[in-house]
Image (cartoon, rainbow, N blue to C red; front, side):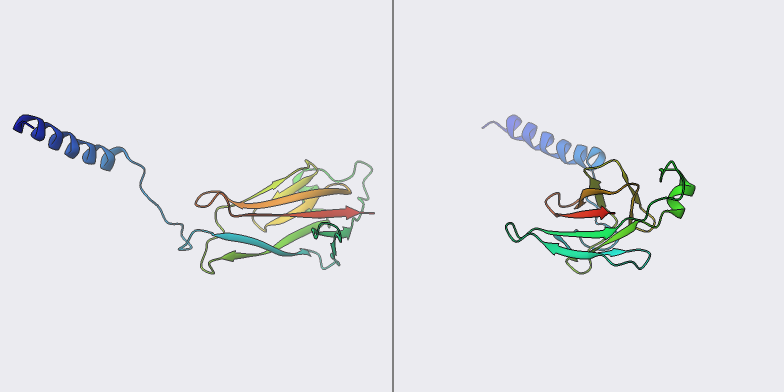
Length: 157
């Protein structure tokens, strides 16, 4: 190779390093210190002290949880309005384990297969507006898109 070709390759190489440093996305570590590797839902608790029963499907081994739904005193039922949500006693909270132990739960995302549940991020509570069955998936949304777990919760009369 000629000297000019080698010098041109070297200059392009240096320019690409500078371009990545200026315009590249910096690597970040979550505030908790580590990314979530796995999520395991170990239970469901009722936020107002009521009993949540655990059942296992004998055919599939799938776990699901159920509790008794308290109907609203209002004729319209519960709504997504702030006052209605504050007075709604039909609240559950997922109990989960993150691996590694120092993993941050800041980037966890809850998804539901039903529009009649509301997630309250401040308390991590799931509020049921009607009697229904909902599949709740909790997943890490930044570092590991494969870290997820799903549970079925039934609010029944």
